[in-house]
Picture 1 (cartoon, rainbow, N blue to C red):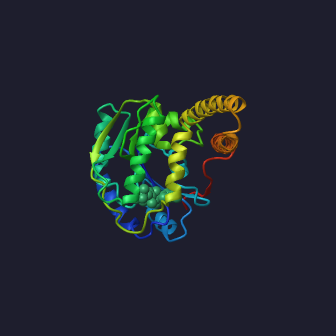
Picture 2: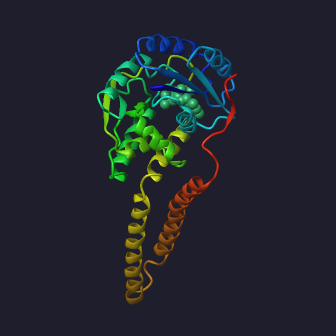
Picture 3: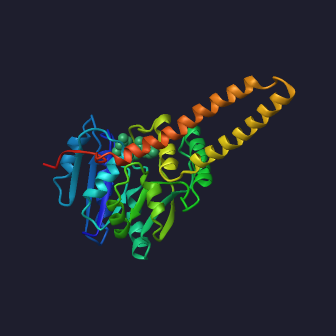
Length: 297
Ligand code: UDP
Ligand code: MG
């Protein structure tokens, strides 16, 4: 099998039938062996039932997770289960047009191990999403220097055979897939496309989950925040020392400031270190990314 089209789905009953039709029509034009692997990420609506219907066709499978683990875990479960050498990840809300699959395969056959689909604009996004994206990429630029993370690229990409093997070998449960793919450093290309508005249903992302994804992207791949904190606390300690000496020489002028400063530093330090300890716990935990409820009938 050459290619797996991996589609994570969570409560997508409104859009799935149209998506499946468009996907199948596109795959007919593709001249390589392929399968479609739907991952049902613990949906509560009719998604599971629809996927089981689709899975009656040849080369269509449905993997049902035991509960909602989140898109990251659903993608990992799908990559681990994929039978194709290469994997294309596609959202099922038709924001990532299935019609672009042949173009992605063409780029892969040209020799690119990773084909990132890069959105031309964020016209359909809300102001909050646009601002969050701007802050996210600015933070990535500042905090991750060892490798390049392409901008305006989400999970819509082709991952070639070597990269798939590498990702499977790394049980990096704290990492974010799109950053991990950049970290691999394999030959990659960006293809521009216009991201459509969601065709039906609503986005599953909340402001908090976006914030968590941002924190995970940085903290799993960079210890810079920790280092910046070390510099800050060292500078602050030196300033405090000067204050203490100044107080001893010129009288009680800064005792209160010093106390407030120490409390602030202590709480900031606990927060920064705590975030990293949390990630260590996630990585050393023997739990898998996600559990399957049942295989397809
Ligand atoms: N998704 C998922 N698990 C989740 C949330 C989302 O599998 O917990 C799937 C969802 O069904 C869709 C894709 O991930 O196919 C992208 O989700 P969404 O459209 O909500 O994200 P957005 O496009 O707004 O970033
Ligand atoms: Mg979407």
